[in-house]
Image (tube, rainbow, N blue to C red; front, side):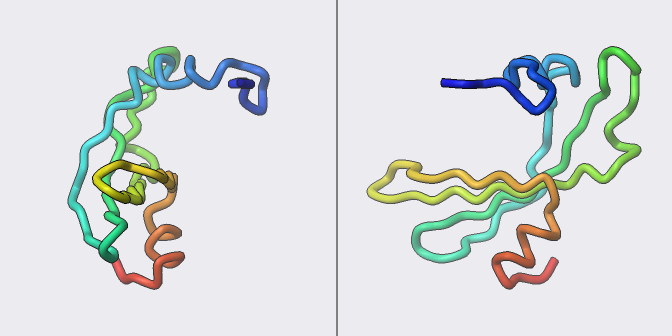
Length: 91
């Protein structure tokens, strides 16, 4: 499996360069019987620059699709508003 990003780095190394890319869940919404939306925000800092992630747009969303008690699909949105718009939901 190719795990290289646009710049050729192994994408598994990106979270370590961002202090582990920690996040916090702000809440959950049941979309329908098979999908749950998790809304969250990133916390932490970039190790090399010391940049605080709280200074930038850092709200994200994740959609979990579950069938027969197992997660079958995971959709990650870097932009929470885009996720809500795609689902026809309001903030």
